[in-house]
Image 1: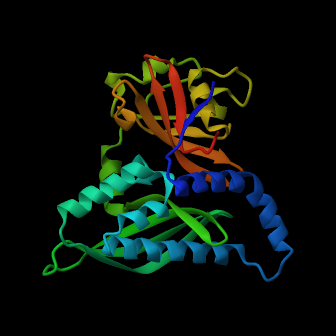
Image 2 (image 1 turned 90 degrees about the horizontal axis):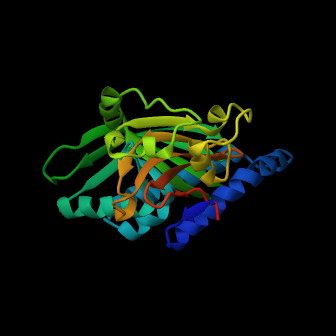
Length: 275
C-alpha cells in the first residue's frame, strides 16, 4: 500500500500539482512551444527563477518568513540536508531569533539549465549579521523547478558547506534488492549514507520488487531513487527513520523524503505529489 503525507499549506499543494503536471505535460508543452517561434522556454524559465531569487533576497532582508515559505517546494535540499518546507521555515525562524540584524545582497549571477523545467542560479552572496562589520562572501546557489512564470526553490546551498560535507563523506551502505528495511533503518545506521535506485535494484525489471524497491515506488515513479543520510525521528515521530532522495517523472526531478516505521511497517514518501 502506498502512503503519502503532505504539508497543509496551499502553496505546497500547488507545488505538488505543478510537479505532476511538469512530469507528464512539460515534454509535450515544450514540443508545442517549439512550433511557436515567439516562445523561448529557457528565457521564460530563467526569468521566473530570477524573479524568485529577487523575492527570496528581499524576504530574507525583511525577515519575512511568510513570504519565504511560499518560495520553497514541499521538500528542499537545504545545505546538504533534506528538509520539509516546514523545517526550512523553522530554520529561518531560529536564524532570525539568533540574529537581531541580518542583511545580504547578491551579484555575479550565472544560470544553468538542467532541463526544460529545472534550472539553477549560481551567485556571490554577501552577508553580514553585524551592521558595523564587513560583508562575508560565499559562492551560493539555488535550484529551481518551474514552468512559465512560476519557479520554486528545490535546493539551497553554498560551496563552503558543500566542501565541508564532501570531506566527511563515507562510503554508502551496501544494499541490494533483498536487503530488508529493518536492516537499513536502525539505530546503528543513523548518520550513514545510502544510494539505491529502483531500476538498479530490480535490474531493469528482471527481478520482482524487493523491500527497498517498494519504498522507492511510494513516489509513484520507477526512475526515482534514494540518495541521502539516514536519520531518526521524522516530524517528531521517535519510532521513524527517514532518508532523502528524488522522485523522477518525465523531465522533472524533485527532492523527497522516504519515511519508514519498523514498528508499524508503514512506509511513505513526503513531497512526491503522489495522492
